[in-house]
Amino acid sequence: MPAHSHSGTHVDPSAPLVLDTRELGRRPGSMRTVERTVDAPERIGLELIAVPQGDPLELDLRLESVMEGVLVSGTVTASAVGECSRCLETFTRPVQITLTELYYYPAKTPQQAEEDDEARMVEDELIDLAPAVTEAIVLDLPLQPLCSEDCPGLCAQCGVQLAIAEPGHGHETIDPRWAALSAKLDQAGVPEPSAKHSTDDGAPTDLEEK
Image (cartoon, rainbow, N blue to C red):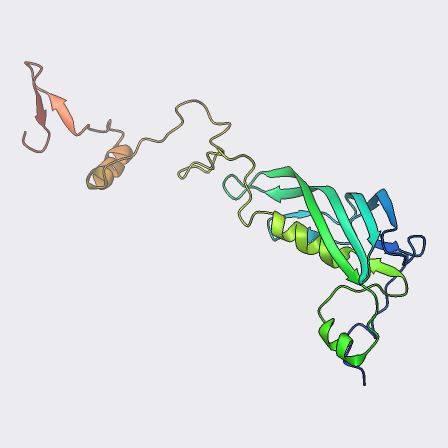
């Protein structure tokens, strides 16, 4: 059996990221451009951020015939939807990747087939951009996406988004040593003591020392 792993694959000519190279021909140096908008065939990205399935992918590509196959170069533009890793809000982020991929013509000998096992191939005059586009988008997206570089995140006490909280948002913290006493006084309806109080002459003194 041939060693070539691509022999059993079939490229769907109707798939959005499949290009037909028959008009290009195989004469080295011939070129054609591809400018079109297609739907993302699947969700492309990472756990917290991705280009949703069905969202537009704008292709601006050049196909060039070379001795070994078809050289594809250009850009793919899209918009990714993510969840901010600090404030958990949903946001969108533009994505533009640059492609430079050589799609090889089918190998002529078993040795060439073995060498081209991991290469991207021209199959039945078709090239499938999906694996290359998916890989490039995944590498372009951040593992910990942020809605903005200076996102302040969430309040550790109440969970409100600090970006929309009132200026000076904060929470009064009670010294753990006073927590039990404060709870008892709350139940009795007595105002909470402060750590210090003033004497008759206005000089502060520690409550513990009084």
